[in-house]
Length: 299
Image 1 (cartoon, rainbow, N blue to C red):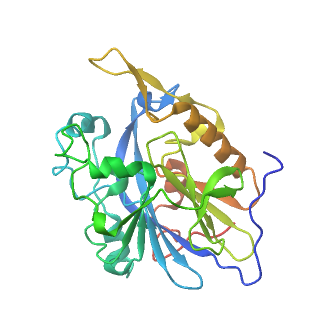
Image 2: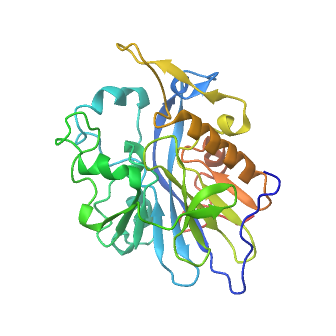
């Protein structure tokens, strides 16, 4: 990993201004995510982020956090919800509006994956194109009630304005074997982040014209102890079923490999890594200048 580097800036290099958005909170059941677990559960934020392109002023929201309510979610979703309660509902759209940006003017919304605490409430983003990883396509095209076991309600995303990243030009960037140069100018890369859930993606964002970066890791790791090696991905027995499971059901081996790449990325100069449920960062920055209408300070 020591030989890995990120693309150097070009002359007049475009970048993205990154602002954090409050998008609710939940309680993380520790034994389902960390081994060893430091507690039965603890409160974590669900962070969303606004990106504003330095040249074109194009706007992109990464993740939508919690929805306004879970009452409209399918029956198969509800039994597992109590593990994450109590919830605090606060939408990415309301955070944008409070900072002076009308959600209807946002150009794109990219969700890291389609778990309930990341797909929020898309309804206010009436002018946006929604971007999702390719693995999310069958989950949305066969949502509830088409599939009675689906945990996603049909129509949650407007499929006519949704683009699945299945026919794109992936190329290596830094430690990641598959990334998409979203704007074609080296400012924002969508990173394939396998393991957690089909279609899971991260964002690698050039945060300044002179070489600073921000990596938005979604649910690649639910806690920093997984990145530092202080804890491992937990495996547990599913109640009422003779099967083992973990939070990275798609492919735990690939999830572990991707965490290793994030660990290597974090060792590079001027790279800031943020998790979707980043408790240490949130405790330090809550209510501060990193939240919209403010911005993250580049390293």
